[in-house]
Image (cartoon, rainbow, N blue to C red; front, side, top):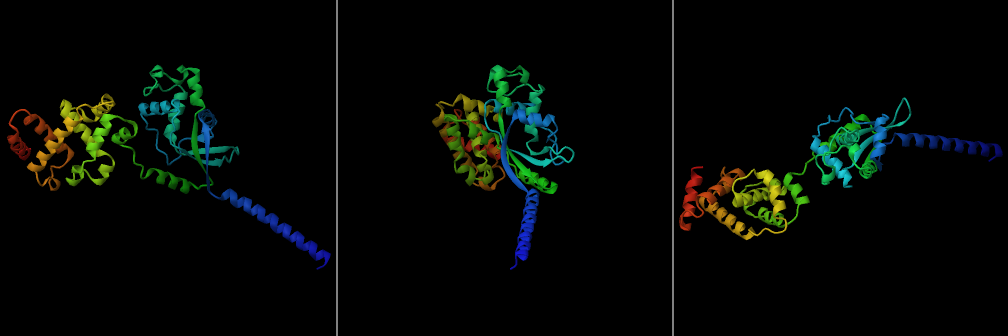
Length: 321
């Protein structure tokens, strides 16, 4: 190989290498990718005010959070508890070249935060009663700094097409299952009453008699209904859902009537099964029916007639229900 041909070969390799590098860089810019990062509240507010953070892409819902939910979020931040990850689409503005973020998921959380920073919201849901009812500007400087320095975890999506972003949003929201009130109690509450009603909720009666489906059992519907029955046997019919939390708190340390209530409920269930032997196949196996049965059993039979007659009384009551 002559010197000239060798030089030509080297130049050809260099040209190919340069083209390859440029092509690779261009391809990399066009490849969709994800990256996790954090941004504090102060930075997010600055980006929002400067137009670099856009809260309402066309696929997002309008702001629908009630003030209580907004306030609870702010209290979560004050308590330095984590909140779910936000999802942004990152791109460059064609006009200014600056980075722009479109919120894929997290619009309502950010709106609530910005609303509070703008003194358009008062704290109604908070663990710290000393700040209840206060706007952001009325908080002590220490708490203001805690809010502004709070880090939110963000997943940034780059080079995603509009169709890709819409698909991401749909996938994130199509099968969202929110925790039920009883699942929240299971996660947050503790104590004697909780343990007692969860034991009742695990009875095979609920499944065997088809009072609750497998899904309802997993969502702790039997536990919630057990709590309602326990309250019924203690104080009579109540506003069932709202009174449960009160009992969780009242009997956190000790539930002295547990064995007595368990015995009474077991007795009433035996009576119902004897009065309605085909309960699992009938239409009156639903919780609302069983609640009425227990009312009948506790009011109409306890301390009124001799024990041997109670089943017959209950059976006649159920047949006329």
